[in-house]
Image 1: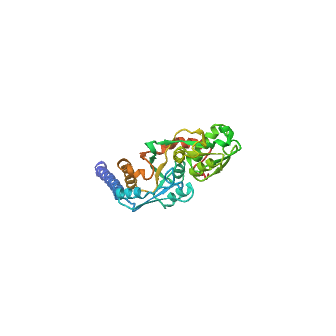
Image 2 (image 1 turned 90 degrees about the vertical axis):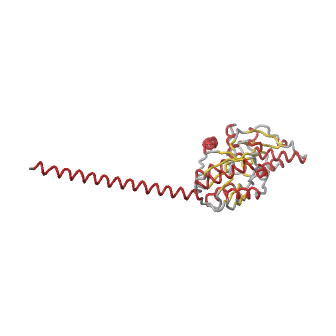
Length: 318
């Protein structure tokens, strides 16, 4: 009799366990469906886009090695591709001002130098999408250490004890790379020379040309264009000497604010690339030849330089 009574009880227990399992399974499926619905809604929101305008910030040195240029034609073309208003301007008076504008939400896109991008990425999460291509569509440039022929300086060792013009604490070719070159040559850039920040590549070039600074560091792009200008004027074209040329430096990145959604990121990137491929005449108005895809790894060699110089970019203030 006991065995007979125990069988229904066992069956009932089994059915109860199965019922609980099915209930849990249904709950799991419901949870998964809800998660999928949330992800779909998020994706749909991104597809619709969040940007209602695009504000581009350039470094205060201007968006062209030869100086500031009129960006209105480029802005109009970009606005046409994106379907939203586009404006651009040089931001503040230092490289840091442009980075801060990106971090504070004053602009959506920043046209940066490699070092200022690495700082913006590590401190504020800025995202690189492209780099610009200069004349002849090269993806790299160099840092030149220059002097005036009248100074008698002929080697890097001759710079010891001399005033030396850097560009800006966050300039790649005007600060980070020349410091690296000097240190590799056996000079301490903080002790063996008397470094000052001139503010821009143009200020360094003109300062060395005039004799205001015995020597300084400039980007090869700027140097070549300024020398071309001198040749056209027929004056002082042989006044400067290049003491050292650095290794190749990856061209400056175009970076987005960290909160820009994926759809908008891809849309902006596509618009830049489309103009670069289809409208070279428009690019000529801002002194560049195109754009190319890059990633954070493109700038790894500069991180190695920063580490070699004991620079922590997350806390760097120049």
